[in-house]
Image 1 (tube, one colour):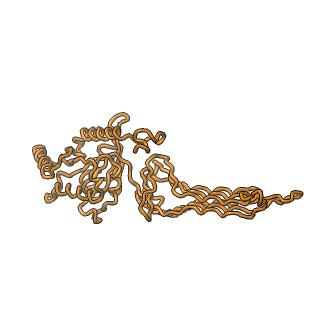
Image 2 (cartoon, helix red, strand yellow; image 1 turned 45 degrees about the vertical axis):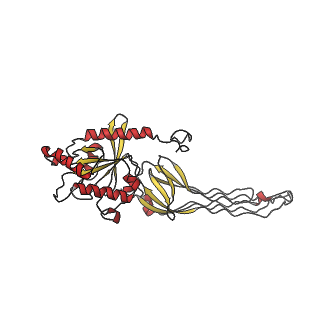
Image 3 (cartoon, helix red, strand yellow; image 1 turned 30 degrees about the vertical axis):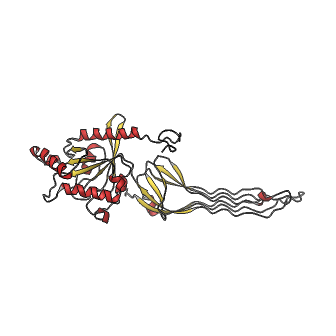
Length: 357
């Protein structure tokens, strides 16, 4: 299925039904009084998170979603039927924004989370509501209230603990294939990966984390070069970034240090908060470097880059150095999970709950 992570839709809740003005007319019952029923409420539009969906392709081609109107009230105290709701099922991790103002309406972060996007209009009152001790035959009625209408922008941001970033052909897809069951396309040309891939890395029984592989970045991505910044949003919910660097490029004129600096610069241009996330260096393709030259080349790279953070030397193709990398990632992710527990919606005043956040 084609991966779509952006869509714009128009939604409209149903209008409420009009109230009815009628009177009881039966044999031998003079002055029967009002018996006009209320109109039914209009249907609402709801968003529901579904973990079995991983793309927004359904909303790329079906842009208009409208709920049914409520039925009008009738005589004999008959109230109108409510309009049916419209339920839009979206992937977990979808951000719903107002297309005109850019304000975030909601984020769907839990499976089966249900959020109202547009409220249906209330039904109008029939003349039964207007009977008083002095007005025994009211002819007043009210129309139904209109339902809400909105233009929304949907953005899918995948939920992952760790994100991979780097230049095209740095070995990101080979790395996620080596440590997880993900099977992205791997080839020796740039931009083989055209959309994000998720892989679950299992460290032990009930011990795992999720890795996201996104298409490569190149210098000038902020101006639209390559695939641009369109997939960097998928890294915004990660706890750790792995900067994969090709330490043995085929072209001798390519400087890995300059490429690493370019990636960091593009990251900062896109989102300073994303640039400030913990970032580790993963020096890949060391199997292409002679054993006696590896240590010197790594030291020279770290010195020229002036890197102070963690450095891992791996070969994703030969499966070298991956065990230490996976264990370190899991320790980091699990430590952050303990420091920032997920909020429990049942107890808003609990630590980490909505009220304390």
